[in-house]
Amino acid sequence: MASTNLENNLRIGHINVRSLIPSLNEINSSIYNLKLDILGVTESWLTEQVSEQEVKINNFKFYRVDRGSRGGGIGVYVRSDITVVEIDVTKDQREIFEQQWLILKIGKIKLGLGIIYRPPRFNVMTALRQLEESIANLIPVTDELIIMGDININLLRHTNITNQFNNLLDTFNFKQVVINPARYSRDTASLIDVIIMSDDHLLSGSAHHQDLHQHSDHQLIHCSINIKISAVRPIVIKYRNFIHFDIYSFKQDLINFPWWQVVDCDNVNQKTAILSDMILTLFDSHAPICEKKVTSPPSPWFTDALRAMKNII
Image 1: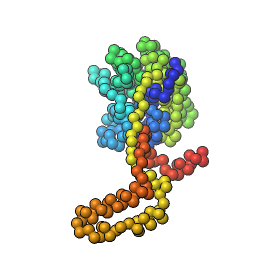
Image 2: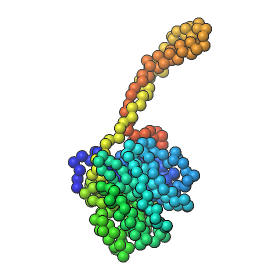
Image 3: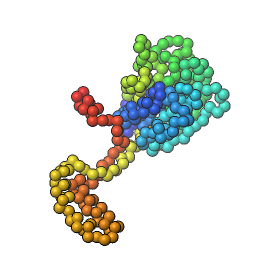
Image 4: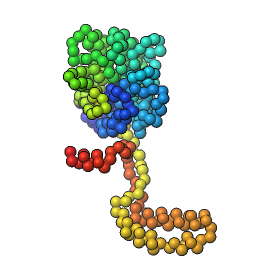
């Protein structure tokens, strides 16, 4: 179902990143370029030694479940102005595949969100059974439910396993909306990365793919959801405008300044105050303070060289 106003639709995505920290700049760029409100991450490869600051993205909060051993790990970046409650639906299970569940309050809607990852060696039928139990626990306390992740079941093949997965979705009348392969190796393409919805009318348009180049052999999958969300509130920053700054005029005014006022003053505190006022007055004249509204953080990785390359392309 098409939305009449896509601008304020909720935008979600998922990526099997295969180690988050080396890919963080690319993830940060993708979130803002695609205007995502939510990005699920699987195979984060994080441990408890990795601090929150090391995986921080401005204006987002990262909810994570580390595996505690080598590899694996899941998490999700959620816009920091969205109210989130973390849900534990797995406390009675001894061995579980990796799953994380949140309830997001968006307007009047309680949106359940699941991030899942089934390691290749984890028993498929056990994973599907545990997923079914988790969904059953979330449905009564949510209005809608979205699940994203890597199930390591190639949905391009028609096997007993894919039939079992599809039967699970049919049980709840859920819809898997990613159609094209999202993982490419040297010789094969597979569809193992999924976005599952409790109602196919939630999907606005279709799912899209974006390469992460050398960071992962999985593509970032993303889509627009027919749930309205308020626009990101802009931050007002103040800065000095040096666009019309004339260094020669600045130097001349600097020479002509009444420096004798500083020299003739006997009190060191007054000297400091006079000098500070003189310098600020000079800069206010040549580089006035301006205000600017911003919705995205600065990108220090986007260097002049990259800007030049972008212009060439």
